[in-house]
Image (cartoon, rainbow, N blue to C red; front, side):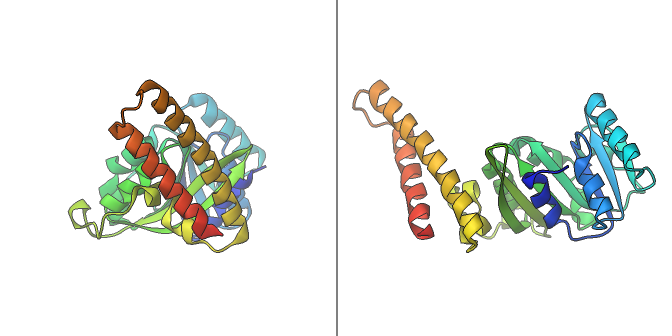
Length: 241
């Protein structure tokens, strides 16, 4: 029922209360988590009526109506005053959108010490940067491959400090690839990271070639930026050997 991406998200869930799955689509993740006994209850939400209807059908099919509630709405706006949520999953959206959704309920997340598990489909660096600037601790990170694509899965918990108290400025490559992912000694993780870096290097070399043609020998800031990116990626790749 669930692919490696959703399995990796499920593995990061370690609190047994109520989980909110934002953008639940077919509801496969909350169904899997409840059936496996990892959580007691879930709220499956989606902004799409069609997707939510599919989730409701899956919940009914698995006879889990008493444990999983479906709610129509955008982001964390579906959270009610009496909800006792301890984990929020936001998967399958862009990193910028994920950051915006979290920011709208930042006080609630901090006050209730909620675990966040996010899976951005693009711009993972933007959500990592948001976490860093807003005092979140990234407690776990993993790469997962599904349908030929590599995904970043990031778990974070809010701290007490604000953006003005961020501990230190990280390199862009750390935001892009993930500090915990780069330090993971596991062979599977290294293989996926190598594959991801290989893809990114090809992308940057293509940009470099286009810039060399269009700029006609003039080295602009964009060209320098691409060279720095290639150098950083090559450095991470060398450290993996």
